[in-house]
Length: 145
Image 1: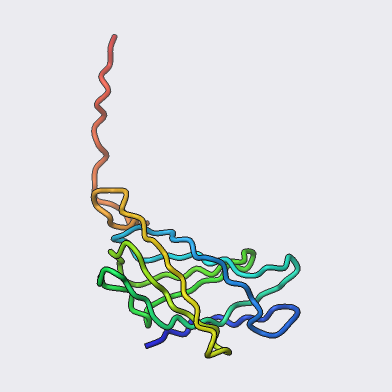
Image 2: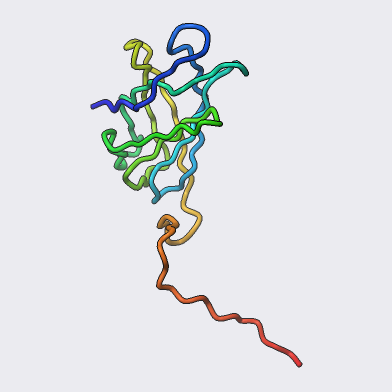
């Protein structure tokens, strides 16, 4: 089942959909929600309000669980030529194959292959802005007089 991302490409010149998508950068680690940053546009004077792509499938070569296509969210900051895609679920796969196409061009199927880096911490929970109940660690520094 495909997921349509709520983005519509409207370059200042040329036909709709004439937008270059770059290779995605993975901003997350295994055990976290998948976060991708995808650059778009090529001309310096190109003004893009948003972009219309459809994620057709996400596959993990090792059979790991993949993000639910219906629960992907997107964001497009006004001042940057980036699309951020975030999954609702945590991803444990080391690699993902993401098939997508432009909404107005059904035969434009393309593929991104991304590597999800391993978790850097023993506990790969995402950082949260919520208050923590943990106490600060005691200092191991000793005073010498």
